[in-house]
Amino acid sequence: MDPNVIPHVSIDCVVLGYDLDDLNVLLIERKMVYQGTEYLDFKLPGDLVRWDEDIDASAHRILQDLTGLRNVYLKQMQAFGEVNRLKREPRDLEWLRSIDHPEERVITIAYFALLNLDQIKSQDYIPTPNARWIPVKSVPVLAFDHNRIIEKAVEILRNEIKRNPVAFELLPKKFTLTQLQKLYEVILGTNFDKRNFRKKIAQISCVVPINEKQTNVPHKPARYYMFSQDVYEVTRKDSFDFTV
Image (tube, rainbow, N blue to C red; front, top):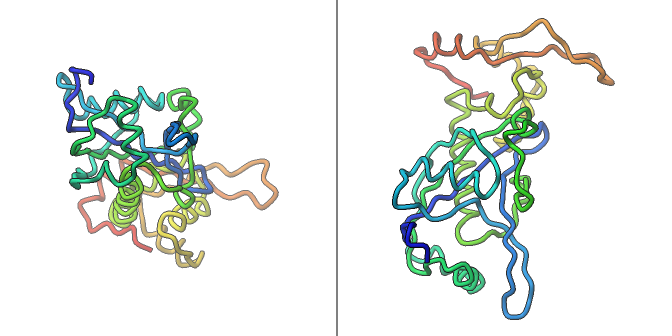
């Protein structure tokens, strides 16, 4: 084992991205041979923490090393420390042995990040060949307890978008109200009445209409809106409610 790493402390990163259709999570391919059969499954981007780096720096290093993503805002989410979290499946244990990873108890600190369509398309967010965007609703059985970690991240996101303007981190800089409504519906897993949704958004002063409309669309062009951080900072002292 690498003497530069702490053998029982790891980082796992949940990177969520929205492409105007689905909420996606960035996963890493895991190829292995187990009992003579080749397997291809997925895991979260994660690795052990080094002795000479703090936790936040470790999260950024691991994410860039495994996915190619850099300059991503990562927020510490929660620690996961079930005693047998690495030993649920024999295949997982075999993979750990193949990479000289400790088989004993490892506590992982989960981070999550939100990326919008503009960021996903930018040069800073080109993933490595073994990194895959997969819709959250279609995530298969993952390694270790990584399904549970993703479920927790989505649960946090669902709670956050009701109290804070984090939904706008998943949208392009300019967006339509239809796109905003669909984002809420995708994350919360429900449908909203169009009129009621727009009445609610009209009460949110930091969602600002701009003098620009869609172009080259097969329907009536919709007006674009933007999220104003300045307006939000002024009004956030009030009871700000994003529930619809």
